[in-house]
Length: 241
Image (cartoon, rainbow, N blue to C red; front, side):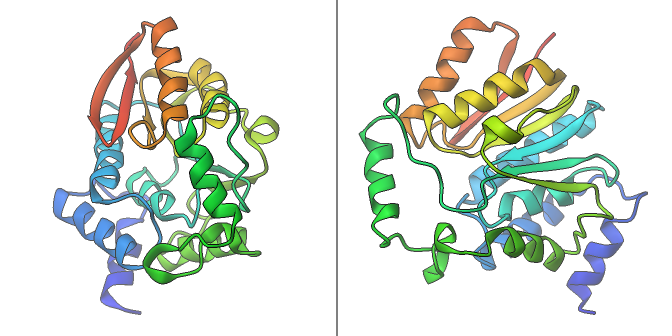
């Protein structure tokens, strides 16, 4: 066993404390070096900050991610969460569904590139949406970071969010990385009622796709119980009541 893997196993023991900044930076570098996340360091650092706040304020509830891709940010969440806290991962684990009429040209141009078969993967790898074994690959990627799903309370939910996403309250931390308006809106409608007071929801694509921004802005216009935690590429919102 390599020293790196042994250090991960030690960290993932049930009594492990919160990680320090240097450890989190090292995890992010390893995830990026393995070509497992489209999120750059700033977005992954935002996830880590949300996790730190949730742990620091002892917000009780499950953690979840909508839009898993290759599992890079899911790995980071799995490493950051208390071991016994559930982490639920929702994705079709296949080609991303198409954008809809409420999305802008940015989304439709990107999807046309994906459907053409010319989209490049991370670091020259095969684009994840072209893989036939994506679900198994995500599980393999988790295990490569010493995250055995059964032992670390990590559960995958393959399928469309409309069919699978029914979180039970409370939810302490949610990471939403599903690009398009409809998908983001479904996530908001399903997660918002379950979000714990003090819980945080992070929108990866708020500054990347107009449809995501529109869905979030519509929510903010009708729900005053939210405060901004950060806005640096991704957006973090905390429930205040």
